Image 1 (cartoon, one colour):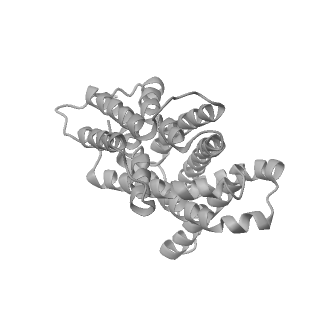
Image 2: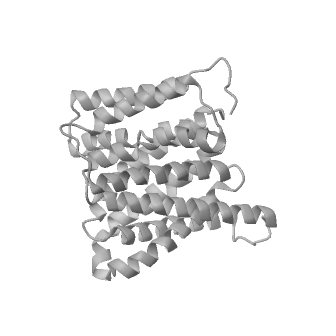
Image 3: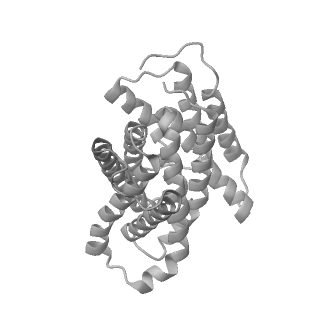
Length: 298
């Protein structure tokens, strides 16, 4: 397993906190526009924010600063990350329309179980037994936090579960390319790829009008600048030196932060059951960071 420095864990915690706070904006935006329209505009905005950041901090790109081989890796990584992000995000946006927010949160977080299985299946990357315990604790915590009462399986649930597979692939693809390319440039390219891929179905099926988009500017702006531009870039930076399974464990705290922001900002109290779920999930993260006597080859 890759070592996980405290800096990387803090960056991923910040990412989860940003995504948790942006969940309300993502849901509210669906009151005004369709899923592909929302995804396209937030992705264009996220990419534009990073272009401005790059111009302000590094000057106008000359195109000669990156060797040809590295440019090829950067473009390939950006296209692969963007495609995976588009598939996962589109499935989630569609699924949320047909299922509850709580079930959506739980099913999306199933990537904490899917990522280690895909790592083992595709890359023969074995994990210590302690990490599997942490995965189990996180799943139990997510269940207590998100699900209560009778649980049925609907079309929306299926879409969100497929979205969890998409996010698992995205985490693994980012893990492959984040150490081989500039993380900010990689993140910038992935947003524009995701935006372009979202534009086609937006124009074919949703036909958005300016009068529809205008009321959604606040939700799209928050999701584009913070959730996309800042959040996914922090994820890409942190994953340069962080095992993807540990990454998925920390990022699943998005649901915990969503519940906490609902309590702090909207007065939505946490029940004893939900509080226990939060405690279990935080315990899993702390447990996963305990020093191990020996590394397991993978």
